[in-house]
Length: 145
Picture 1 (cartoon, one colour):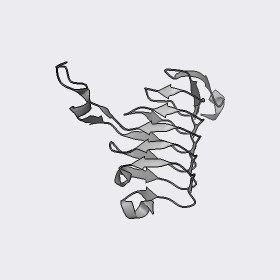
Picture 2 (cartoon, helix red, strand yellow):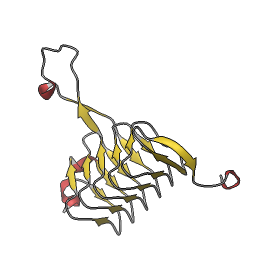
Picture 3 (cartoon, rainbow, N blue to C red):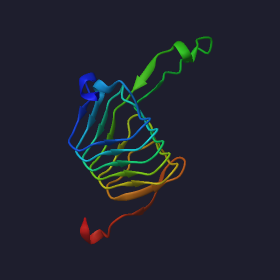
Picture 4 (tube, helix red, strand yellow):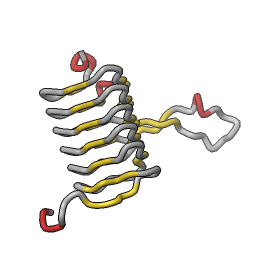
């Protein structure tokens, strides 16, 4: 059904129950991608998920955010949105309850620990955790890079 709403979905996807996708026309999903239950994808600013990515339970990929007016007499509710693309590269794993904020690229083969809030780009083959997410170690030995 998503293909009819404009999303580009690759082969062999697994999209679990309760997944919410806003602005599916701006969503590109590669082959063999797992999107676990109760995940929210706001693709207004575009989301690209490459092949073999795993997204755990209750994750949030938010490519849009409310614009915050400098004039405090104006309501945030009616101030519009800012949009910046999210890119999740091949083979990455987002554990459960991860939040990816607008403009973030998660590197190839990267792992994001449960509950992390990712505000900045993530290096390839590295492990990030925490709020805000910080690099805690590399996934592979230097000799394999």
